[in-house]
Image (cartoon, rainbow, N blue to C red; front, side):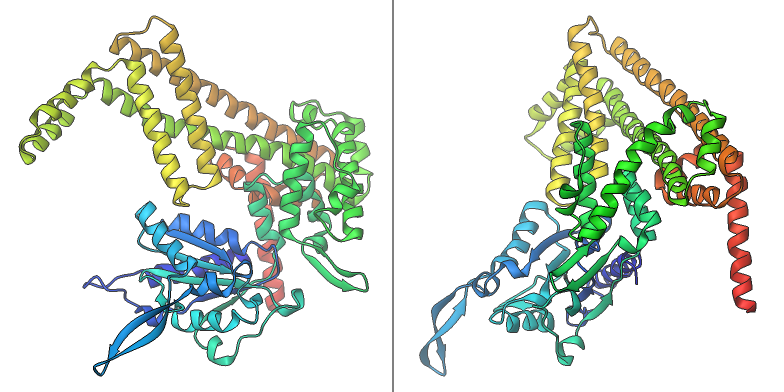
Length: 528
């Protein structure tokens, strides 16, 4: 199965393992909770989906690459203990708690998350001395003499033998105690992830043409030659930063990430053409509505690779706009929540006061302290109230990040919202805004101005989409390039979200035709 389907299956498994009955006991006893074993090629995303699952299930995650560990760090160090058996004293060997088990308890103490995932990567590549310990771990859920805490689920990952010479085959006894999931690379699924994670458009476009190079591993006389999803993602990060520095990634640099000379050379050539087409076809002008007939004729007569590249350039520019809009929408929603809290803090009203006075009754002797809190809520300056909200947001962001419950996108949204609020604080402190009503009206006005700008941006982006359709129709008509264009629009999460906000008739027209064609093809296959 692909990595997306594997993620769904693992998530379902974890939810089933953590379900409790009416007595508060796990519906599936710990002894019957088989460890999940992911087997797939390197760089396919096994570790990333475990991080996503832990965030989505709101549970902890402790991850280890077991090949980095010795038997002592996994099992613990031996020490001599005296025990009484049958009235006689004996010396016995016991073991300290292993580093791995201790990490789980540290996670529980630091985050308060009593349930989680213990993820062991490269589990079938352990050393000979550690192999028996790993088998015991999978079968009995113990490291040495220490059991994994209840509520913590074991997940492991490994590579098939064709990718790694050091792989050890599990025996039938072990395999009969695990839940094995085999993962295969899937370009379509990866592209969904790529659009979301801002993978460089040249890589997305190139792999759309040369999909066979997405995950390619072969053995030659010169050793292992490979290109992996992880390699493409890391290369993307470098190219994006290089562009900010006005540098170009050449063949040698690309070969440091895509360690297959033929594929590295092929992509290096494509990247040069990508930059060339970007200037030649004036994509930014197309999206502004300047559509030149000579360029339409030129791209219509160009090679298939060139036509796809130009289509990819249009999609990447639109995708950047859609992602920006989506991000701004999330920031606006979070900002609205914070401004509501700002309003309540400025004017606490009867409800918060009542809550505090109820606390006074429940905690005799705390009257003076709580009265001070009540007064403090009303005596703070507006900028101090806003600063307090920012500090609370930052504390919560740090807590969630430490717990592994904060994804990169959510982190960026939180940071951007706090930056906006910091700007409001600075303006308050440098101006003459002191009164509560005055402060609220001013902050409200700033938010409304930002909301108006957001609506204007949405209109502008909608026009760019319309202009992109104008160009695609003029250059390709209803050809396969248009099919690819509409299909890729459906792949991007931010694009799908935008199209729910903006009515684009041509998108719905072409998408309907595309769905009809797919249904027709499916019916023909059944008939045949």
